[in-house]
Structure formats: C-alpha cells, structure tokens
Image (cartoon, rainbow, N blue to C red; front, side, top):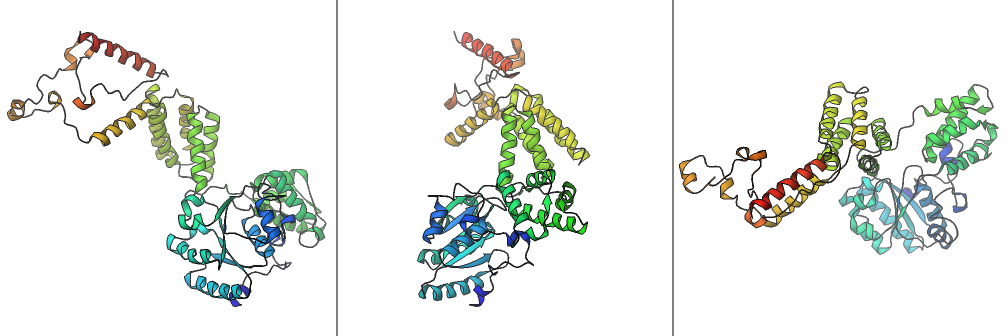
Length: 442
C-alpha cells in the first residue's frame, strides 16, 4: 500500500542518526516512564495483550512518545501510519481511511500516530472523530502542550491521556552508555570511551531529552575520531552541544508553568527562587517587558499597601529596562524582583476590588447619593444635588462622619487592611475613624 510503504522502515541503517538507530523496538528495551511500564502497568499490559485503545501522550521532547506509539502498534500487529500536522492534510487522511478500511476487512488494525496533535485546528481534529468511534483507526496523539487546552473535548473524551515525564539523569546515563557500547546499532565499533566530566556534562545539558543526548554524543564521537582520540572528553561535548536551548515555549504550557513558579516564589517571599525563575525566562528568550508587567501587577495585587513603594519600584524597573535594554536591563529587573519578594505582603486591596466588583455586578448602577453629586448648575442645586455635603478638610484631622456608599450598600466593608508592613498603620487609622463615626452617632 503506497501510503504505508512510504513510512520509515523499522530496519536500522548505518546512515540513520544515532538517536534513530537506538530507538527501542520493544518494551523491554525502553528506558524511563516506570509509572506506565513494568509489571501490571498500563502500557506493558497493552503491549503484551495487543489490545490497544486511543491514547494521547503528553510529555516533553525526547521522553519517548513516538517510540512508545510504534512499539504498541508493532505489539498489536497493526500498521502504524505517521501523520504530521505540518505536512499532511485532509486529502492524506482520506487515503489513510480508505486503506485502513481495506486492512480492517482483512483483519489487520491501523494505528494513526498524530505527532504534535496540538498543531491541528478544531476542524482538522474533528475529521478524526468518526473513524476513531467506528474503530477504523486507533488514534495515538503526541503533544508537548497541555491537551486540556489543545485537543477538542469530543476527541479528548475518546482517548486516554497518559503523562510522560522528562527522563531522569540516571535514565539518560543508561541510554548514553548503551549507545556508546552497542556494536550493532550504536557506537560500539568505534571503541570509544567517555570521561566522567564529559558524561556528567552531557547528562546535565540534555535536560531529560534523550534525543539531545544521543545527537550530542554522536557529534562528540565524530570530533574525537577526527582528532585521533579514543576518549570523548568534556571539550568534545561542549563543542558538540554549543548552547542547549532551554525548554520554554512562549505560547505553551511550560511558559505558564515557569511564570507561575516566578509569581508564586515572589508571593512566598523567596527572592532566590524568584530571581532564578526570572532568569530562566530571560535566558529562554522571554520578552523582559512581559516579566516587568507581571511584576507591576504583582506589586499591586500581592503587596499593595503593606509597602506602597513596591509599585513604584516595579514601575521604575519597567521604565529602566525600556530605557536600557538587554543585557544591562536585567540588573534593575533583578533589583525589583528581589525587592518584591522580600517586601511585606497583603492582598487586601485586591480582595477589596473583587468584592466591590461583585456588588457592581449584582446591584447594577446604583444611584449616587444626592449629597455626593456634582451641582454645577442652579437647577441641579434646586434638585438637592450636593446638599448637606461635608467638606472633609473643614473638620479635625481632615475626617468627617459621612456616608459615601449608595444606601443599598451602607455598612459594607470591602477593604480589610492586614497587620503586614505599613498596612498595619492604615488599619489602625481606619479603626480610629470608625470609632469617631460611632461616637458621632450617639
């Protein structure tokens, strides 16, 4: 069948990259994902029985999503068709369906592996639904993004979502050692070794991505061979890796995870963690002004009047970065983030805003009390606008007992200052004024 024949052969060729040659062909060879593999685990059972269900693999790059899909298809004796959001379209899907129906009549199943399924729009994802429901296809989707946001609900309800984890340093080490010494698929015929510092550097820089590790190992091995050396050293791996990009998609799930960690570290008064997460974002290419905007919001929402200067510091840092740019602009941002993380915290102003907004939604546009209304014309004055208004500066301490809320909300208290920082003084001042209000009524 033409389409299926176009899929990559499972036979390993020496011309293939090391990462492809070392791709496990069966469950027993797979390294990592112990929560899904092993005795009694879901994927091991599926591989042994050959009973497949539609799945979504959600995990970081290089964690084994494509490999597991192929292993499961092979174990079920199914044809595995790779479908790409970048190169495949509706026309290709129709051809796959026609051939899958032929195979189904002959008693053979078809697994449709959809890589980076989150790149498909709603209409494209809808095209899979009827064929998954009828059992013409078993769908295995792979995504690095949260499927809750990226996969349509009808399709998601017909698939089981399995979360894959980044490989641990020990697991990456096992994969590296296996590739280095495997004489058939790996680099064993070269009789190379790797130094301890080089191995540690490779594992650390791979960030749990086995593909990064194997690609760098192959490049470093070529460098060592070219130089007539029998040992892959730290220098070879540094040259091979250059600078590994941090895993961070500015429009994806990891973006929200890192910015969440950044904000929660500031809220948790941990300046060390806060500046770390800030630099993680900057080094990964995040717009520093996005970070600065988040700090301005944080200063008002989570510090508020406990330290009113926090907002000034955040705004000043934003302006300073805008004026200076990278790389020196990181310095005022670092000053601001450590200040905000170390400042006393209060969300009383934020909570007051939410409570007031709720009353606005619930009660609508309540009339402004007459004594607070503006009275620029004689007619308005005749109607009682501004009548009996008390000018606060005419009274002791610039305070006067007077209602300022609509009558339907009299007695409401939205702002409840905390005992934190300068807000404690505000709380005490409001309590004094409240006592004056009470005494004036007696």
